Length: 226
Image (cartoon, rainbow, N blue to C red; front, side, top):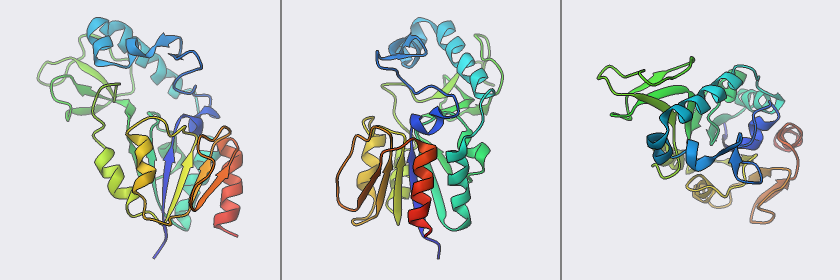
């Protein structure tokens, strides 16, 4: 039976593809206060601003490609059972060829009804006021905003509980509940943390690789596949 590798990825995974990390040092996201564009309150206050913000993010997604790190993770499926749990809302893991990807914080290329959050649609064009679900309710980005539940977290916990190897790439491990996932892997699970500024430096069975994703994954593969 193939070993099960669970991989937790964050903004640093996609940064080398040209997608900016979620928040810069002054707390802004693409020049916007996150409270304006990533909260239910922001959407109620100025839905046009929020829709336009995600329309721009969606357009940007079509201009970038998976980087080498995404491709390396997809290739791991040749020798391992691989589950990717990502905080990213892009589809770069899927485009690189990874077959099992869980998006904790939603997906840019999907929208959902403001009436029924389970009514989710594929969406690749601009989303504007007046675009509605079949029941006539406004559609919104399929993104988990601040203050909202993370519906995929329980499934992610179940996956972590079956890990033989844990890999963490490009995430500060500071955003909850995603940051808690590393605590659900079985005791003594080998853990690898790839990040140029690692927030975790020591721990049982922990190997830290202080590099960008593309460089760190090359080093990791040499450890996994001697």
